[in-house]
Image (tube, rainbow, N blue to C red):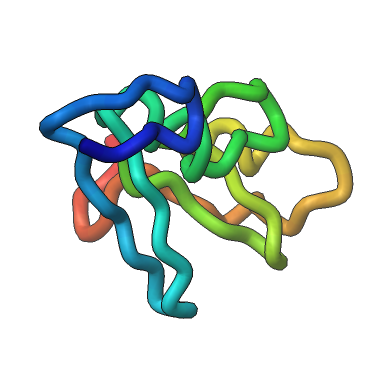
Length: 86
């Protein structure tokens, strides 16, 4: 069994997450992994679970949030690619 790094639960079905920088984390659930590893949107403060976006080294959950953040060059950010705007 392994101990979750987020909640401390000792769980038989724990799993490891390895990052590109060779860091290794142990979690008992995706919920704990998200809580520990997912970045936070700088505009609305939610955990970014999907693709999200990065603008000038800052992370956002959507193009909408990047456009609304103060001091970010997110004016050109779009949620869709190749779809004509009517």
